[in-house]
Length: 291
Image (cartoon, rainbow, N blue to C red; front, side):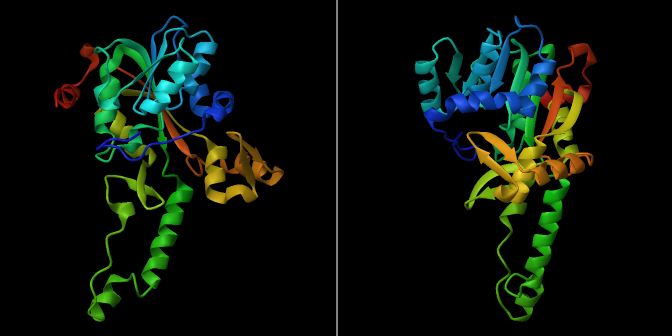
């Protein structure tokens, strides 16, 4: 994805597409969505569908009214050439080419956190195209307990470094240290190679965003624990190959143990949402949507 309001454009190799589609079988977010979707005649949208792997997976399962919208024109063109039976169009999530309330279900996996201004606008856009009573499954990266501990440790190390300690620099009559880019936003910022990459949210932060957009939360759960374990501890314990994780026995034991602590090391946070009918909405929701 890339635009003035978003961060970076993701890329993948066409040769990886089959592996990407197979990864849906082990993807906690996709499997959660499948447990929540209406019948196979429902009209479903994946907003920010990337390579189109989830759209293809659902289509193969018999959801023939599944559609996708993706900003990356090159990806959309490739998928349209390879799989003309799939309904995938190019478009910005903030200005999707759909009428209000036209989808029975809306899915968005790891997309809304890439908007520099925060999650409010993309979540409201998902709310707009969802029918009253429809279901949405949205996931974002989790600022889990392990990541928060890592942040505290990093801040402590910085304070111990005379080059970064503001008080020491002031005593030595040097300019204050530059602002920490990880704090320059409404939520914790994760950087990749020096570029803005994504926001990572605490559970209550994501839940507040969903409610502010007008959604009612049906479920709020930590997911993608093995992914989180990989991102925290790397390939020494878990190998990642062909879009699948291969944990060692030690990693499997540790993952199963720490999963008992909610939001300890999960990579993603999923919310299953619904759009209340107009009679169920509070005045504050009407104000938020009108803005």
